[in-house]
Length: 363
Image 1 (cartoon, rainbow, N blue to C red):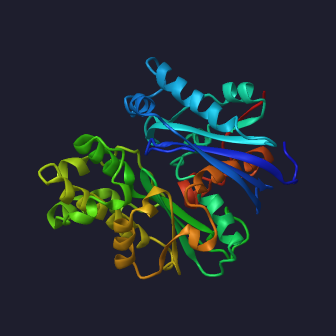
Image 2: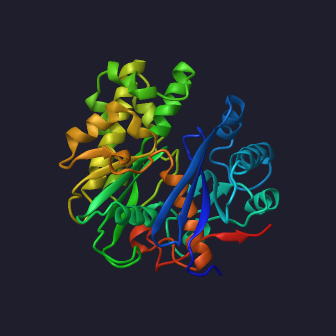
């Protein structure tokens, strides 16, 4: 068990957008952020991305060997580029997430990474939470709490991660600990970039609608947007979580639209899901700080700013790195696991009590 000393941890995140592996160093004692280190990005090749896309939705079993090789190779390359690492937090690649059914599945072998890299690796962060009745997601909120402290926030605020799925963390920075009552509320808001990326891949052979360029030329079709918002998920009280493909109906709703209108409408769907989510916050947030790839989409950001009653800004406005926040989060969580501290609680995942997750593999 790690003592209270601060160490340099290296986090890795490969999200459901399937763009690549983010890596980031963080010096922390698992409670406060002391220093940010270097970061990096290892993109997936088209062939690697196709291999991973082909196994989305799959559970452990045969047929995953090629995808597993992609994950292991990419992470060894990305993580092996760092020196002075005391501990690694390895998220793996989420293939399937069904917390009330079969559980949650992140592809990747932390034990093999520890042997290859010669550094202890914390991994399988979500399974313990699910076993104890939680959603297993989102897991970044405890790090968001530390970020709110680091920026000196005094009023309740929110972090919005726009990755493949959107997730919202409401933070009251006046509370001392993230697991304390009233400190946090977190949940997945709905689909974000993943279905837009799928649309672009299917229709134009592109990875994404870069800078919202296609959506900016289209019109939002209100009928499709209203049908999307009729989905029962938006009425469900948080905490709650989603699988990447839970809202595959979005593609059906825009099937008859031209490419530009489809992109504009799906972008509006993602923004509207966030607006519905903010209604669940205990008190209105004083500001909304956006992280993840979606903050680079000016159409998405403009829709959020128009629909919410608080300032909407990228996290760079407060000196954070929105491309690396998730990777930093798993560095931070790895240290918490090594110290025996909780990584989730009833208000973030719905787990029955504050609980730590993660398995530690040593070289």
